[in-house]
Length: 228
Image (tube, rainbow, N blue to C red; front, top):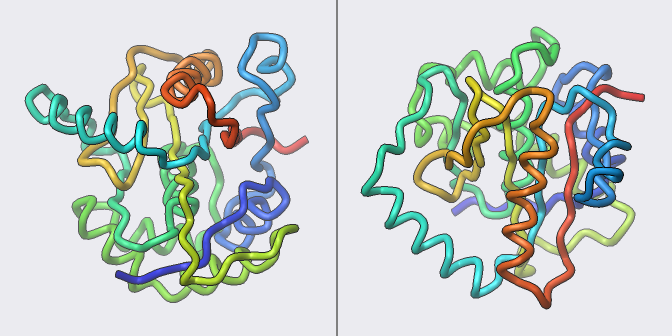
């Protein structure tokens, strides 16, 4: 398996990455400082995606395995127009979280010759598995990721270091709140939502992640929203 340096959950670093990928500077990543109503009101609207970074604890891995087996027995279909990709690169979850958040929002402007637009055009009609393999072979994406991963405020761990955190994204699509995680078998539905309530509804699911690890504090929540 290909291994990248892990991304830091730092909006400054992630916004540099978005620019390198060819995302319009009108959109950016910002911190969500809390999950209560007043704190959510500080985030610029409209929120296009919510990104959660969390520790891959034993409790989470058990939940993930149980959830996967349960959902495989149910209707796990999702719109053909949704852009979902599998993760085949170790430590690429930050990049895949951004891909899911950006490419499922058609009103986020992309440079026609930018890295992320070229990737989208190349594999928009492929399967999630094929998209994941294309990403693994995309040297423009690899180079952009590696450069930005070295620019964090903290020292970037080496490729061989074990990273025990994972990025996922929550998006609104056709009236449904979806959890987008390249390690799972398919996007996970979390009930109804709207563009206006995406942040609030995603915050409720983030709280569920936190409740499964009540002694853990290493959670970070970010939002893709208009640049201020």
